[in-house]
Image 1 (cartoon, one colour):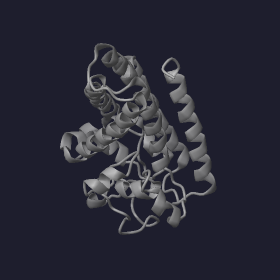
Image 2 (cartoon, one colour):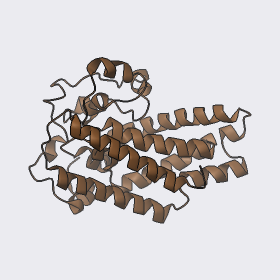
Image 3 (tube, one colour):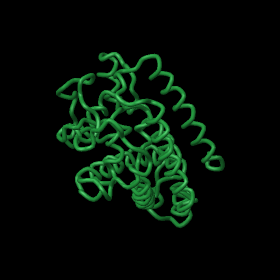
Image 4 (tube, helix red, strand yellow):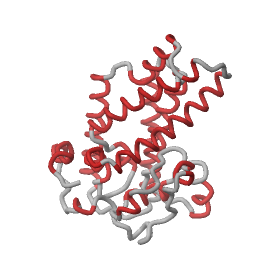
Length: 264
């Protein structure tokens, strides 16, 4: 797993992308407000730029940090004797909690929100929204993940599994797909569903500042940030950022400069 980590992650990403894109094609939830071709090109372009930045600046990635921490005995799970499988499971759960806290921080701290609103400025909501992040936000997220991995002493296998699952669930919970309400009601106890996360992309700020979870839905319920449904309903709600609603969303340069040129 560790030897072929990059290939494994790319293979899982590609498989989930194809499945979700096909699902959106045959059973979409909302009518698009923007041309799909331009949006997909823009979102995939910024995702490719993110990946390039990570590979250039952090070639070892989080799994490399985990290996170093394991060799040197850094972190909680390298100091406490636990069965390997339990350490892996606990690390995945705690890494997910860290992502929840990080996500909330990017909403509540104004300078971080300027970066994160690039993600929220998408005026449609589909699987490519889940990979649309400003490169500086991605780099900050990597540094936060490094710190959490070292503090936990997370096993390298846990780091790889978590990265694959986070990437897959990000595309899933941003999917413009229909799930029967009865199934969604039960499914959202185990994983963040598209209907649950779509609320988070509302232009209404109280709705936007809710449902921060990406993988596990429990943290929003525990910390009181859970909102079941948008006030306007999923078909009528407006997606995006209130002051950035415009017919032409612009290109890649606009996204990259948005945190430095737009009001928060």
